[in-house]
Length: 410
Length: 175
Image (cartoon, rainbow over all chains, first blue to last red; front, side, top):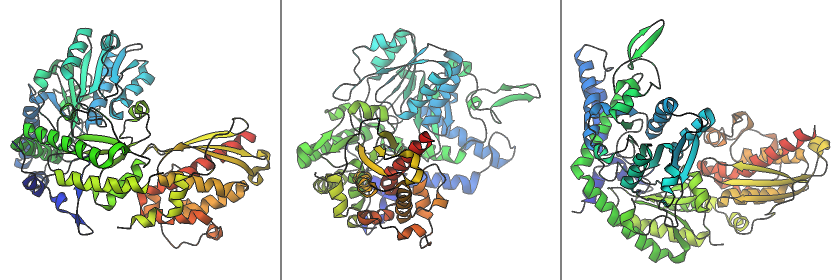
């Protein structure tokens, strides 16, 4: 089944915007996605009709706001196949979700010499929290390398996992587009006795996931890349692990009792949600989940594979050997993320030329500097696709890239 | 939207394609200073030799080489800068730096000392009298159009900030 992209585009107010009389071509959804009117209106409706602080007031509004927050949690839980809604912790973003695990689970379970395994293709959000524990606790960080195709090189996986306490790894690279073999990774980590966390920020928005069946212990992702508002992310974790973990941020909402001599924490999920939560953002995320489910994750995935395939073919045809595309050559093995270099043109200059054509792409290191070092480049240009992109967007991109290539030839 | 011709003047592309004073110097006698733009990953490496650091701000830049990688704006700015500062005293380099930053709409009182020039540039008051306006920037004037593209101001100033860091380090180490 193919998507009716014209109808989908019409659902996104920002995509109707024109700059200098020309339409906007948004190819930066791995950075942040645009929002459908249904999401914007849900947030608007919350503040217009239900806004009150949650879990506190006894009046009607407070009851409604609490139901909005917990209703959004239930939607997210169902969407990712979580066995229990209380396993869905709302955070500020995926970065905070990963930091929650590093700071809470990590401090309780790791000590000097313990091993955490990550990979060469991680986002800084899944590197720096572990570097902080290297500095603080003296843990050891091991890196799974990548091969020429931008896939994980699993030759030494068992050796790397030997004695490891945690495997924390991206489900899909935000630079290479590589979709990692989660079953194999999780099975190997389990066999080694390591806990598993997935950074699913690029995965959850674009293809179905079922955390209940996956076998990971923690899954982190963010709302704003999946049509939701900025300011809300999710940590899913297994109940037994979350219950055993100490609190991370202390304050209101997360306590059962407080005295002058101490405190006791409340139950999940609120134990990890100190302070007033982002109720409006949660409502928006719930509306985003509704939108994605109505379109269908399978259909979105199929659309992105087809469009990625079209883009790889067209750009290769039009730009020839000027184009160096990173990541797997087989579109079905990757998400709709295309990072590349183009002849002698620097990514910033390419992005600047594209901007003149209202084509929005990301240029830089994509918060993955260790990966850039492995790839031997300082920066790449990155095009990323979503359900509202179509072939005409790719055609406009190709034209702009031809212009940039000619302009910056040495 | 300002046009690309405002940004990519021919002399800028010329310095990008044929960067001047590109390379390395032996350390010592040269100093080596790295500058990074954390937002985009661009980096500039400056190798610098002064005739006599003990002369303070009257010390003369006798050799400079530029390494690193980055976009046409950061690389051409550093290339033109290297040509301009060669043979100048540190005092003159500081005046040039001030004049260049002023052209980028960055005024010293706007700078928080943490490299937050781009933000300062956006809201900077234009038309403020600045004594360094009298300093001739020569070819560097070609970069004036960068100010219309606020996110690129950091590209243009990367080399200058790195050079000033290099000078500070050299002078401090000679005290």
